[in-house]
Image (cartoon, rainbow, N blue to C red; front, top):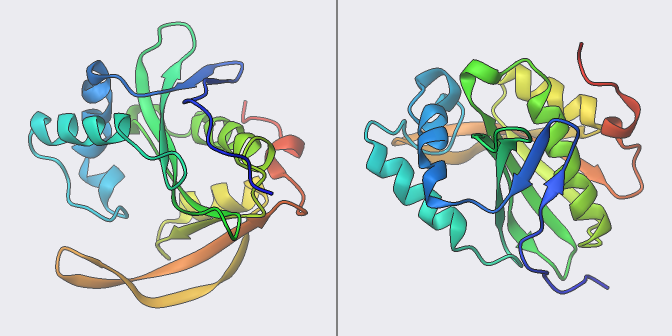
Length: 192
């Protein structure tokens, strides 16, 4: 049986704190959302104004944890927001969610996404009692596909014309991790 949602939990790793978003996190998220390279595989356009990122952060704060939940990924020492992880499209009766993540482009390739997503997966499988966590990843997003595989996700196939972004149809690769699968973040060390 899936457990009822709990108040927004704080998740901690050796370098990171995953916590509820605050209005002052908009600046950190704008570094992510205003970067064309970081956003090229996302499902919405690049933010050209800080107000767009502020609006997104307000939405992240006011979420329905049964269906979606957003965590600000913050440096443990400074508490500065450097990205986010989330689950969405929650289907609690079937005990599954879809996940997403983004890290400040200046902080990519430091193992931050691996660490943050791993902490969120512990919560999803442990606290929520989920059976399946899935991710839809653009076929050209090699870094995200490698991250999913390192975490233990398996590619289940390509979904043609899965998402409409900016008036164009886009394919996605479906990756999934089941509660019974090996947990890659438990076996793989962080990059040096």
